[in-house]
Image (cartoon, rainbow, N blue to C red; front, side):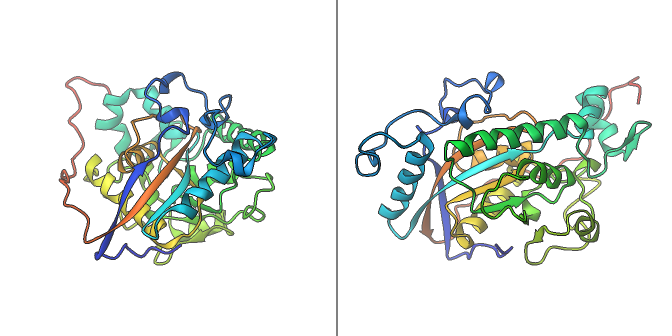
Length: 322
């Protein structure tokens, strides 16, 4: 659980292991998918490990999946590991409401660069009442799946932005899961939203985070002030992909946990899915997507990738009212 980079003498080759969750099925429509009523998307099916683990058919789907996952790791080579990632998007934030109010065009060219408006501030945006309710829905969804023996996360990571800190706290409150009493997730700098320009994506100081979430842990080297936010330039999607690949490589290199929870943002989750070869699957605010990831340790540095440069704010259209 450190911020060390993966050594350059090897890299991870990530792939999504499909066939276990509805979200990786091309026939599943992200716009109409409800993770709550679909058991987080777990597909009812048999596994080749069922005969030895559940010969009489008394185990739940989640129990059989967890045994199968552990069997995959047990039977794999030392260079290969499998992890189940639960990727949770934060609940609705004040900035989400503001973007709807002004429209994406004016939001991107003007309002996202401001600290707020007459309704309040969206610097390091906080959850709305709707956002809190969405996190509470995630809490109830976990509570329901716990009854069916869903595998518990063994590690919890969270973006340093306030909307994620709050979402994680509400989501895992009073569930009785291991490692949640008290709940002490690790704050990871690289797990944040697309960096730059938008003030909602700048983070609070380390001191302010400690004051509000005193039990949360910081990865090694976490800076007092935000070292990544740039008010003039916004990170490209390809640069964000590189950043989230670095984060995943860190987790896979230094965390032996098989089941991992990450509470993050739409952009960060989009990049994680891209890095692990999962199809695009947009999440509504507050939603959760599980992904089974295979990581193979490959000797040598990572293959070169093309990274687009950062961009400046677009010019507002003529005669627009800001």
